[in-house]
Length: 352
Image 1 (cartoon, helix red, strand yellow):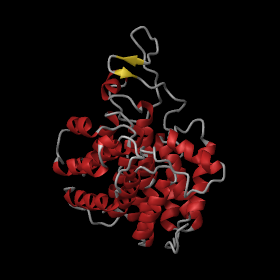
Image 2 (spheres, rainbow, N blue to C red; image 1 turned 120 degrees about the horizontal axis):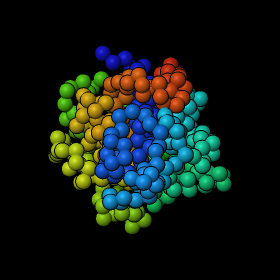
Image 3 (cartoon, helix red, strand yellow; image 1 turned 90 degrees about the horizontal axis):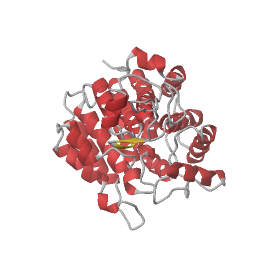
Image 4 (cartoon, rainbow, N blue to C red; image 1 turned 135 degrees about the vertical axis):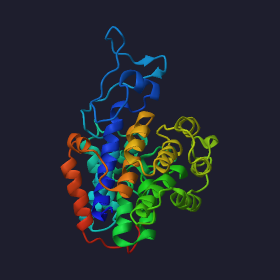
């Protein structure tokens, strides 16, 4: 039996652990991870890749290698920074308040502006907030990235705590649109919140993921809006196209899913890849998380999204070493505990 409180803790802790596991090799190809790290199985510090002469390399036979950023072992990036900011806003306000969410997220961004790993769209939106622009107008149509789903798990916790699914869905949309206006990114944010909620309902105890996939397919059809000429990469298709492929190929080889779905920072690549790995490794969360990380790409974010989903389903499935090595693990557990024990109130009105 998994206790609900452990599921709350697992959701936030899973986000941070997945983020920290993937951070050292973000954007790397799986071949590069194997070449320079062998395999990521624990939290490690970023290590500059070197050639046989000990010289740091910026590319190899597999392609470019992103320069190592200033992170230490166990630290996390924007995925967790913004997830915690959202959770803390909900706790402080005892519910959802878009202006307060924007304020709390902006403060978290400002504290880690130089070393948080924030993407261009997110930075641009926060810079608009710094100029006192309304959070209802700061979003960008070019925003195709995965920032909405990476940080949205606290909305799923809110839905579970209050039973306010409709209010949570609407706020997931508004929070996504604070930075990203691409329908695929917005839908991914909504789906992550909704599926966290679903996993907390004891409806998914089967050893198979079929019911989970049925629910997510219904949700994406309801919430993914049509692409327009304002959006980028229209030719790459919709989020629901990728999810439909997963639904028809649930047990495909991981390498095939990686080639077909992709796992870049685009929301219609990294989110479907995360969903594929989560549903395939339905009852093997540690194996699934590590396999997700070792496929590289935007693996701090695929790790964070997988970790949050797996934590919502399995609770505290993490190794003691992961928890020990994660920066601020005690604080994250405390935030989750406080979230679980705070009386939250349903949304009564939406900002205009």
